[in-house]
Amino acid sequence: MERLEQQFYELPTLELSEKLLGKIFVRLLPGNIALKGRIVETEAYCGREDEACHAWRGKTSRNRIMFQAPGTLYVYFSYGCHHLLNIVTEAENTPGAVLIRAMEPVEGALFMQERRGTSLKTNLMSGPGKLTKALAIDCSCNGKNLFSEEFFVENAPPLPNRMIGTSTRVGISKSRELPWRKFILNNPHVSKVRGV
Image: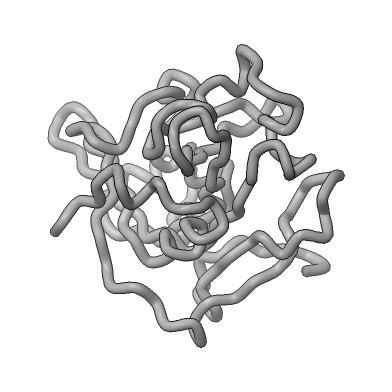
């Protein structure tokens, strides 16, 4: 299947958060282990205009990856318990990222089940902390990109608008009113969000 090139990730963050839906995220591990997940839920974080974005106050040692080339992985440890996977967007030095909130397992489910300690497929990657654990993603992946033999995204046909849902973002305290969460409607692998 065709891999997405860097130009795809140069899109505005809000546009990319929707266009990523349905695409196939791939991680290849040593031992010929292929892990694939269909992206079913995202959230956009838009640089200095977005108080919930790590880059809102400018570049720091923690968020410097957000200022790198589009297609770079920004992985951080959240609340001392979960790694979160983001894809850097926009042009270099323009901070923005899309948080990958949920995926549907496509390949490597047995590996994911062992990592997650569950055999329920709809629970393997139905949340941002779940999917990083299933894919063995941690802070050692921070700064890697989607143009290698380890990580890449495979193209898939764009989804029609009638299949895409929109809501406010989850688990943040600032800029909570912005409708920047996108998800595939009626997909059982989307995270279970209360009050949205």
